[in-house]
Amino acid sequence: NVYGVTFIGAREQIASKLREIPNVEHDNVWRYSTYLTHKVFGSLGEMFKGARALQDWLNEAARRIAKSPSQMTCVIWTTPLGLPIVQPYRRVNRKLVRTALQAVYVADPTVETPVNAQKQRTAFPPNFVHSLDATHMIMSAIACQKRNLNFAAVHDS
Image (cartoon, rainbow, N blue to C red; front, side, top):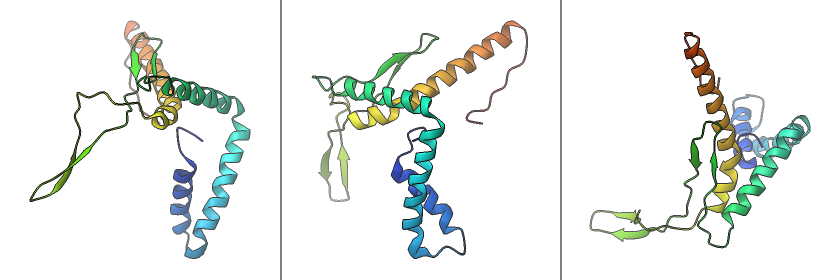
């Protein structure tokens, strides 16, 4: 997948586009979108083998970190600029509190909870890539400033 897009998310995006096509029968959207999502993911895997291997490695690293014996270790890394990055994804222990007006869930933010291993794993590859993109942008801006050049950036252009 690309940037953490799941099979289900990709299928929903494709289904949404298929629903916009007048000739596609609504009853077939699910079947068509499932088929097309398999084809899209398969072709991405063929076209970007190196990127896929790196993503798999990052996923496995995050899985091992999150599954450490204490279950309390978030994925942490440092960018080339020296900026420490911490993925704060944890499972939330919420309690349901019912009042006369409503029911709300509350959590104690001071209680440390185990990491959300799945979120740690799926978020790591795109977050890592974004951190490298941001590092490159800052390094480019600094280089431009040193040469008295104006710098402008567009995110995810």
